[in-house]
Amino acid sequence: MKKTLSLVFCLFAFLAIVSMSACADKAKKENTPNLDSLVDAKVNERLKEASQEEELLNEEEKESIAEIDNFDALEGIEGLDDLEDEDVDEEDDVQLLEGTIGRYPITMRLNSLSGCDEGDYVGHYVYDERPGSKFSLQIVSMEAINTKGSMHLVLKEYTSKGNHTGTFRGQYECRGDHYSGTFTNSKGEKFEFELH
Image (cartoon, rainbow, N blue to C red; front, top):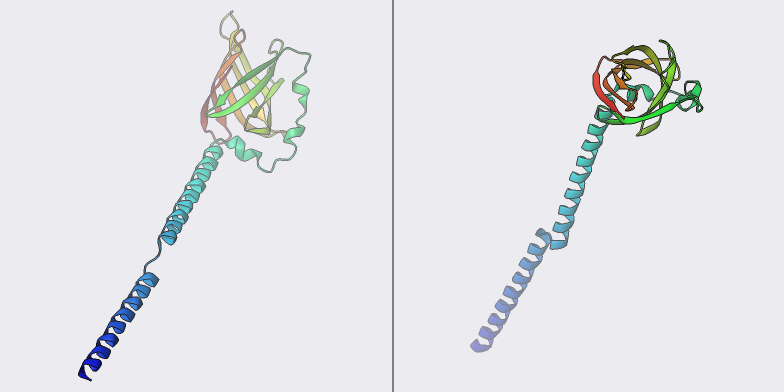
């Protein structure tokens, strides 16, 4: 009988140990995240960081665009696409110049400057990234520098509503179709421009 009791006691002890071990394993599994949940958490964290980086880049890009006052002037202006093309007659000698104001690409079209007087409208230009951003150009002054066709040329830009929003001052090479100098926006900020 002692042997039987001893055997029963050992059996109960063994079952208790196995049961406690199973409970400990279950508790450990419940408290410890599995590998899939760890990977998911890391992926979600990285996606969130990437999204924040993208938002930051978008904000920096918006701030960069706002540096040039003309972009601010474009917001809410109706009829930019309706700017009359009286200043560009297709039959005249039209020069197409491409380049940048600061780091912003633009395309400028100028009528032949021969025979132009101060106050004449001579063309228009657009920011390439915003095709609807059409500004008309009016001559302020044109002064010959030499007999080879180089001149100091000042042009004012106007919106379709007639608002003066900037001024180009620089050297214009007639033969090479090259115009470079300084652009000043309506806030007085200056940007180098170069067009070919």
